[in-house]
Image 1 (cartoon, rainbow, N blue to C red):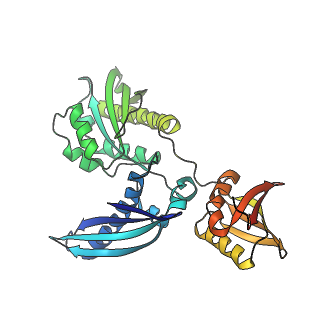
Image 2 (cartoon, rainbow, N blue to C red; image 1 turned 30 degrees about the vertical axis):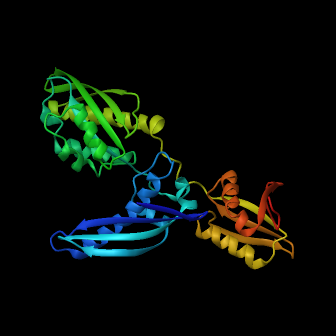
Image 3 (cartoon, rainbow, N blue to C red; image 1 turned 90 degrees about the horizontal axis):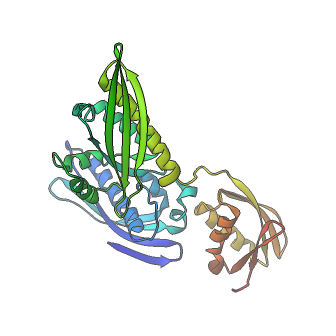
Length: 339
């Protein structure tokens, strides 16, 4: 595992990835192996950083790769393996809320019934599990590691077994759910009153237990159970996203700012700075309103707040030799001045 900083705005990472050739489909395995190598490299960046609330790495993160090159590629026992070197844009990847359209967290879950009033096959129902995955998805959780997690859990597993398997899983959160039910027969229907207790674990800590109660009236116990559970679980995830595992604000509105550049050495240097900011997605676009030999006024468009935009501009102050300031609501870049 290698992480080398080579300038103020990028990191160079070496990583590996592989994929098994299934049904003779070499092209699919080749693409998947390369994709895995790139995603593993991005994951390494987060593992070696002090960042919190780390999302699930998806191909959408490839926008943060400035370039990559293949160091090795080979096939061994029907498995394609890649070793790659990738350059990550650290300016962009450090502000995901501005650049990421779909912020996902990975989760796995386990459900335990705490009484004898509900048959165990209710929980193992494929319909219920499909709906659980769908509810997770509504709240930006992915359950793509659930099948692997479930297969590794021993029969009649203990809580220690769950934690051990979760520790080896790629998922970031474990939802351990305990269910108790009460049924009342009303004419030809069944009323299910369901209590859901949820404990959420990370690899290094846990959250306070969440209690959610819901009821459902259906023609069978199974239908009533599934409906009541889904209501309780929806309420639980709504609470989780609001209070415990919050999502960053995304799809932020575009804002307009006035920038005044003073004492700039050349028009080309200003244009280079603006193009660099566009390439890094710090600004979306810019236009020159007026300029003279020493001053230039521009209008820029960005999703960053004024404070965050100034912080991003300051990342380039040494490279382009300027200082930032605020004057009459304008952002002023004064060139040729040192700290």
